Length: 277
Image 1 (cartoon, rainbow, N blue to C red):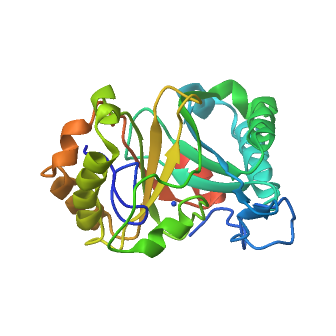
Image 2: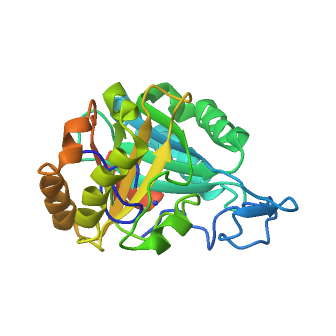
């Protein structure tokens, strides 16, 4: 897959029906009453933007769980439902996606977003304490942070204003993958890179139905970026990615797999997809 491009519409990292969607994300200022757009903290002459910590955690249910007695399995699954429903949306965004039928190695994806890294750990620890945890594995897990892009969207400059704050959950489908560029990319001049990104952004802006959430993992995880595309039209995303293959920027892709196709699903429905309870 080629490298992403615009913050709203294209699959390159340089260029966001919920199972548990809060009315607004945790405030960037730490106040539970502040709106989601309050991403800046005033510090006098300069403005400091708080960044969000973002986790994409994928789980697989072991086949052995389906051979448990029905009443025991139902109780274990209810524990998972209660944990998801008990999440405090003022502290952490938590969205639930099903990967059942789209990949064989994962069933569930939890998209977690918080201004505090400890909130992501807290939820992971609660997952570990579930009775069901003995039957869950985590084949993939990616950690990243929100950050304003270094590249300018000259076609839609307003896109630059939302890059440092992820407000997810408005589309049914999401496509997620880690992304790594070759070191040669970073040795190009800033002007050269911006020119290459201009082409990417132009292509991306042709697909307004696809929203890109670019997150950054430098020093946090093995990948450099994790990109998450939200859309209600999967065919538009496929056409976008195919068109980006023909751009100059596609030469600068070192790794962009595995790719996950996720469907936003209420936790109760996801449980029914997993087991017969």
